[in-house]
Length: 388
Image (cartoon, rainbow, N blue to C red; front, side, top):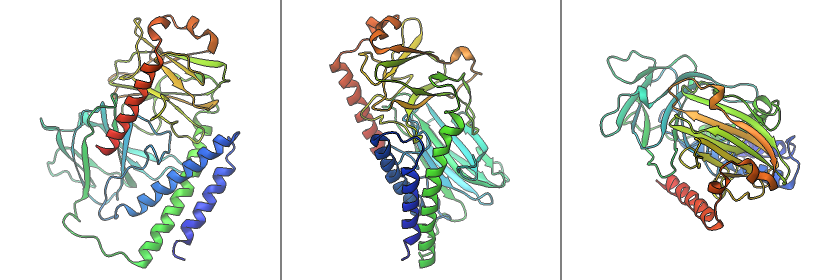
């Protein structure tokens, strides 16, 4: 059957999920199956959503198609490109904290991180007073056009990230066209092309699972448990992003208190991730916080409590049944080098002693009703963002 390669790839990916080295519980395995479902959706969509001659931006990761430690504060858009073709990107800037562009060469695999050929944020663009812009990506020359970026040999993906520090911010608009196919319809679908797309989706699915199982091993699990690194420029070429990473392992009676200065960067976000290298449920639980959501203490510090049990504080980060996981800070749109003093301090305490370790515990405390209101805001904001 024409779809046999895809079906075989699903079976191979399922075996990879079932034999993942980090699985310790039924929850770990069931989350793996959920992760697999998201991968099937995403890779099938990517194989069919756009023609190579007629690219479009598609979301490769989201609440139901997670991968690559997806940031709950970010909308990700990607398009396949050729280094010898020219592309026109038309957009309108929303009110989000950051809008960034990156051109990659190659793909993420379990043995390779793609090269970053171009990386910049919208501060580099000429944007009119109404927020409209046009950017060009191609082999050149610019011929006097503003916002023109020359593609390096091997350029294969254009990725756009729209980052929220307030989940009620307004998303922008963006689209991509290949200049030699504007106004021209793509060729009719053939049986050969249909078979290729199913095969491509299957290959992408297996690669996706293999790849992101490697990243915790490469970048997190070799670090000392229950610590976090100093801020550093994020690997992969993002122009103005620093990150601090780590991994945790806590009992139900333990908590991690993370203290970080309130930043002068337009965006600072923190999240937990599972060992599938995806975000935890950030819609129905507070498993992430950013500088628009977190409570700042009078001394200018943000103190977050990572724990399974509810400590009754506004900046509780829920581990939702994950005694082990990933810790990640991101600072974006920075205008200066970050130092160790900008980064987090970590302390492991007993849940029963949390109040003793929070110098402003009385103002950190939150009622059950107010907590439910915070979660309701998250749920509504994600729905509005997805439908906006």
